[in-house]
Length: 420
Ligand SMILES: Cc1cc2nc3c(=O)[nH]c(=O)nc-3n(C[C@H](O)[C@H](O)[C@H](O)COP(=O)(O)OP(=O)(O)OC[C@H]3O[C@@H](n4cnc5c(N)ncnc54)[C@H](O)[C@@H]3O)c2cc1C
Image (cartoon, rainbow, N blue to C red; front, side, top):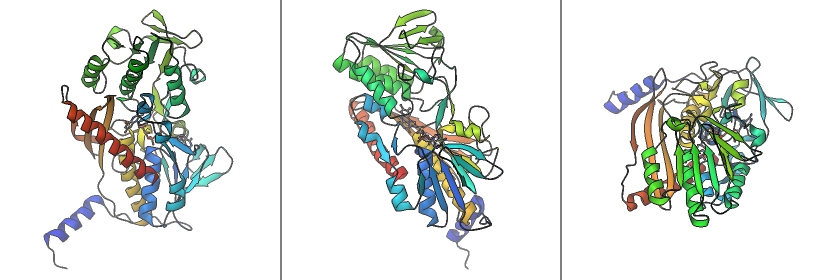
């Protein structure tokens, strides 16, 4: 072979990325089990299936037959999307990709036996296990609220019936009524999510109930895209949104779901709708697998493997990976890196160096879209930010419209990347 530049670079790339020898298995095809069919899990399933051409036995465990994306669920609240627009099924993954989709809850992980137990009985063996269970709420995070109160004071932070309920409550608000939000502390799923939601609720109220008010009790002194949201609220919804940050007692909150009151820094207010978004931690199955630090699951940035067990990978919101925000875009990006690494480990296919990216778009009002994003690389310590960008205040209407349209393209792209 003549050593020309292309061959040399190619060889260097292989060395840098590492060519792993296929795992030697006692019998049959290597088995990958994925728990959670959301942004991380569905993407990982599809990419492993696509790349391994039937060489891997792939099982996806997900209780719901319909996955409602949290992304764009705020746009449903704002009347820009129908609920059916954000609903997706697993039919194509099962039919066209040969993935064994099991609609059940994973209830435990036996790391010695390498099995995942199911609520419906029985267990599924694995050689590699990928966990992408999203988030659960920290017990006792908001005084007076627990999940038994979610029908009176919805969180709507897992999309579907909770989102539908919150919308029905907003539409039923009396004239001049009050919508309250209890915002979460860092870190949490979708940093701009609560504030995009405030914008979408304000949009609906401005059209249907213009004298209504929105109060946000926030334990943080600042939040994602803060100047962009505050500019937008002043421009589109003047006087409607009262954001009470940490400096004004926004972190000192108690709620009473029976009386429908919110007490912020000692001052009680009767409200008509209360959206409680409590502090979050990794989905419970990650804790049950023993791969969390009590809250989140620390992972190695190069392949998303757990720092506690190299045969378990944790994706998306549940992982503690470094600089990436907990977003669907991030989970999708991490899933591709993980799928590539898992295929390499099990079949000896080429493993490329990990690269990640994320963009979070938010809609403030009709055609007024903003975004923040970055690219990332894997370092020995964490997923580290390389460079980023953010929309600016005072941008012209055409650019904001183009940003919103970009988000529509992204939504179509990511959902077909997840579900085929
Ligand atoms: C209001 C809102 C707006 C958002 N907007 C955006 C946005 O515009 N852009 C963006 O990129 N991100 C957005 N996000 C964030 C995004 O939804 C999450 O970051 C993303 O879904 C995380 O993917 P995941 O795979 O970690 O979890 P999920 O997508 O939540 O998937 C987890 C899945 O695991 C399943 N599961 C959990 N436990 C078990 C178990 N024991 N057994 C089997 N299955 C289990 C669940 O049923 C669920 O389907 C938004 C979030 C919210 C709440």
